[in-house]
Image 1 (cartoon, rainbow, N blue to C red):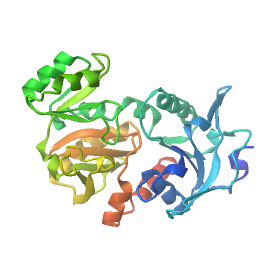
Image 2: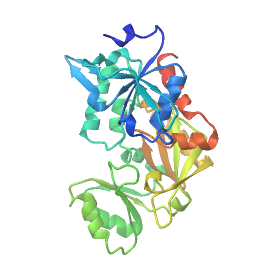
Image 3: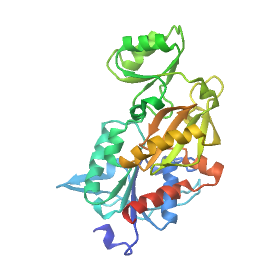
Image 4: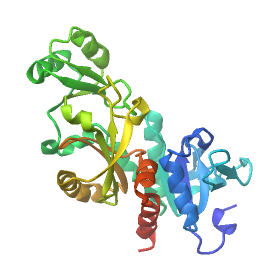
Length: 328
């Protein structure tokens, strides 16, 4: 049975592709905030995980379940039926939020390719599947090299050694990491430099990124949220804990709300149009000092923390921007 046969006429249907909702931390989860805002604004919610998608005879279907959410840390979601024996047509949805967390592996790529089929059938998928594939969260910052610190992307250990020799103090990280995982600071004359380079490149077999260390990290790694190319006027500065160089909240950093500086606004203005053109509706920029370090497009976070600290309803802004794409 098609979803449109069971729903009130005119009521928009929003599907979400995400990690298991039963395991989220409600008070911090951005996807949950988006679902709550969608429900508050009258959209009907349907839940999917990547494993629920099925392509058969050119039609994308999914074992999706009607969902309601509640801002309650003990009982935050309810499904309104058990998993069906047959999947529903994904093309009956109006909007799909692609909110699967990294790692950005081949399963992630396949999920975006499947969602492109829904897109071809008229479903508004955000962020745009092709744009998610094109915009590696580490690499796409290098679309704007003049905004970034000195940066090197390579598999080559000798290139890393030369870059380290030039910059003396660097950060090195994998291209597919998240939450501050596997990020190393390599200082001048660090006796562990060679083994770090060998490990990170898997002996010249794996790409990684090296950037000049920015001492401004002590003031925080700022997460700036962008909605349809426009910045939210406050950032969350993630300040490293004692003895750490990583500000990520997942790595123990603490969050401080800050108004955007003039330089932050300049970065956002320069980047915003490109993000909008590529179909990247909801994006998180990482800025340290005056430098752009990452552009997060797969499943940007920190929305709930910024909302709590400012009273803004950013999630509603995202949902309304998505609805406007199909109902201008």
